[in-house]
Length: 382
View 1 (tube, helix red, strand yellow):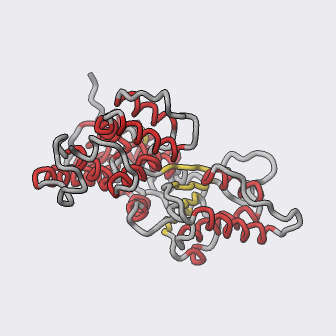
View 2 (cartoon, rainbow, N blue to C red):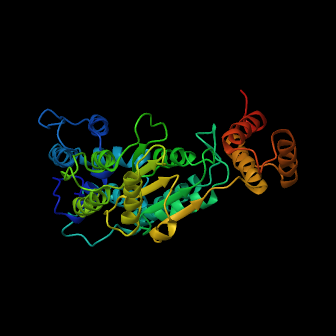
View 3 (cartoon, rainbow, N blue to C red):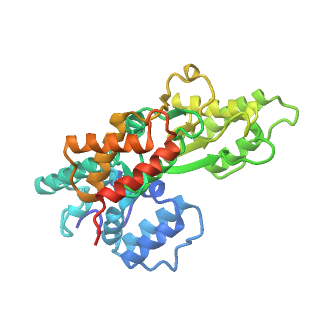
């Protein structure tokens, strides 16, 4: 029999890899319930309200005992959030094993040639889909995403196994920084395995957030717990230093691919200590001190030279070529084909004359106008 047709033993390398994938990718009880229902599992003996790691282990073991592990893995493999190439290759390899195959311990390593070819083809397809996602111009086919080639390339460099784990987005109000969060959500919903944890101060009212409050928010977002107790008389820099050391220790053995997005931390919304903590978190992530945690700072106010290992995107008004590329991408998304280059040039000329000049029109105004123009021209009407 195949590896999915007997009991689940986490000591098996493939089983351990499967367990590590599901517990970090599907970290909500609701996700687990959907998969168990799809597989037709009996869950009366499983405590579904506990922490996610032991819950997944119980579910996988129960599926093995009920001879439903193959159905459970098939449901997980088909989920849009399971597009990670390595995970897809693993699950397809396991599913390709016939039920009367020799047990894993006695069989040669790796899938048989036909199965290996299918796995390789599927992994290549997943890679191609993932690459295409970065080139979108209309997110969800209705949200404009103009230019940002530097962001697109930086995020490619941050997806594991790439080593980069920190990104600083620099730009004034209205330059499009918050579009980064929408693009991250789009990547997540279209196959990305990251867990997004935004902390947004852009709409902060009242007193600015200080380093102690921010430490609590960060600890809850990354670990679901309170930060260490700080000396009430400690200076902000001492609090920041202690928080960085504590967080590095807590995350040292973590496997959760959390992307912490820090937005709107300016001198109006945050104290100097809080901004220092933001900078320290970006630096720690860039240096690999926070385990698998990635940190993205929108509206970075520090000195990028102090965080040399971080990627950096300095926002500016979109160029004519970027607006042209947006309309080409939008046409491809909405109607499946791109207009000829001459038609795109004429389209940009008319758009610039009516809504420009492009170089001085805020992206917060330019984006919605470009969206409406694209929908009017390219959307297929029933």
